[in-house]
Image (cartoon, rainbow, N blue to C red; front, top):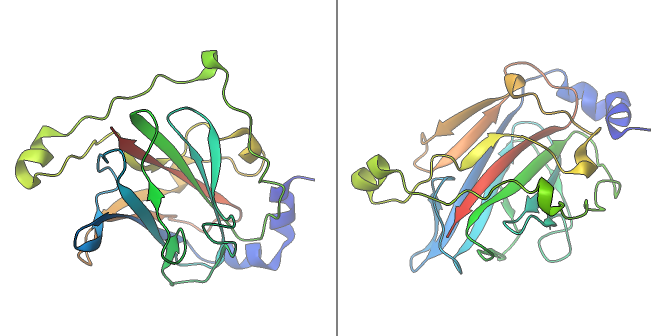
Length: 220
C-alpha cells in the first residue's frame, strides 16, 4: 500500500485539504555574535556551523534528507542526535537540529540538496531506508558556487542565486510514490518582512498529501 493512499484516508489529511499551507524556512549561521539568519542562497565556507529554523501554518510531520556533494544520501532529521520527535505544530518555530545542535559544512565544494518533506501523517519507518548512492553515470555535474556580483557589491554577502529554496527536482527513490512534486502547486517567496532572511513556501490551494521541496546549500 502506498503511503499517499494511507494519508488520503487520515483525518489529518482531511484537515490539510481544508486550508492552504504556508511553510517558512530560514538558514542560520553561527558567528562570533551568535546565530544570525542569512540568505538561504548564501555560499558557506568549509567548517562553518549552520542550522535551520522551520515553521508551518498546518500541523504535520517533518522529514529532512540530504544529498551531499559526494552524492550520498543522509537522513538529517529525525534521528537520535538531531531530534527524534518530528511532530510539528501549526505556527510554531522549530530548530533543525533541535536544541543546541548544529550541522558543520564539509565535503567537496558544490551544492548539497536538502529535501524537506512535510506530511499530514507520521510516515513511520518506511521512508527511512535511504536509497543507495547514485551510480557515477547518474551523478549530475557539480555546480561550482559563485557569488552574485551585484549582491556582493551592494551587501558584501556572497550569494549564489542558483542555490537556496527551490521546487523539488528528481527525488530520492524512497520518496517516489509518496509524493510527486508539482511546482505549479507551490509558490516560493523571499520574505524579509520580519527582519530575517527566510523563504515562504505557499500553496495557493489546499493540499491533500505530503509536500516536498529542496534547499540547495552552496559551499566551497
